Image (cartoon, rainbow, N blue to C red):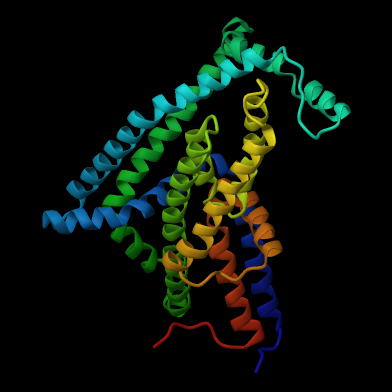
Length: 358
C-alpha cells in the first residue's frame, strides 16, 4: 500500500530534490578539479586485481609493496609498448605527410564520381593549405604574441599538475582501497544500510561484468584492426587500429574512424597506383570482419548476455552521462543506465521493495 503524501513527506522530497540538483550543479562547477580524482579512481579500479595478485604472490599482509610493484609493472608494459609502437607511428605519420606534400598540387580525380563533386572536395580539403599548416604549425606558436607562449606554458604546467595529482591519487587509493570502501560503509545510516549496500554491490557487479570485459574486448579489437589494416596496406594502420580500439570503449564510437579512413584511402589513391574504391572496400571489409568477431564471438564469450538496450536509449544515455561526467561518464554510461532501468522496473512496475537479499 502506497504512503500518503503528508506535508512532512513533501518537504523531505523537496529537500532531497534540491540537494540532488545542488550536487549536479556543484559537479559541473568542480568538473575540472574532480576529473583527476575520478580518473584515478577508474585506473585504481582497473589495477586493483593486479595489486591483489601481487599481494598474494608476495605473501604480504600490507599492500604498499604490492601497489608499487603493480605500478612498476604497468609502467614497464606501457614503456615497452611505446618503445615498439611509437617508432612505427612516427614512420606512418611521416609517410602520410610525405604523401600530402607529393599529391597536394595534383588535381583530384575519383573513379565513378562526377567532376563537380571532386572539384568541391578539392576546394574543401585543400591539401596545399593542410601541408603548410603541418609544416608551420609548430613554429607559429613560437612567433606568436608573448601572451600566447605564456598561456601555453601555464596550460602545460596545469596539465602536468593534473597528471601528477592523478598519479598520487592512484597510489593512495590503491594502498587504502579496502579501508576506503569500509569507510564509505560507515558513513551510511543504519536505517538505509541494506538498500545502499545492495545498490553498491549491484553497481560493483555491473561494473565488473561490463567495464573490465569491455576493456579486454577493446584491446582485442585494436589488435584485429591493426592486423587487418596492415594486411590491406592502409597507411597509418597502427594509428588507426589503436584509435579504433580506444574508441571501442564507447559504443558505436569506433565508427567515427571511418571518416579519417576514407580520407587516408583518398590521399593514398591520388598517385593512381591504388584504386580508391578497392582500398576503401578492403577497409570496410576489415571493419565488417573485426566487428563480427568482436560482437558475435568475443562479446558473448567474455561479457556474456548483452545489456539489451535499444540503440536510441544507448545514444541518449551516452549524451546524458557524457554531459554530466565527460568521457568517463560515456564509458560507464551503459552499465549505470541498465542498472537504473532495472531499479525503475523493480520499484515502479513490479512494486517490489529495494532491500538487500537475505
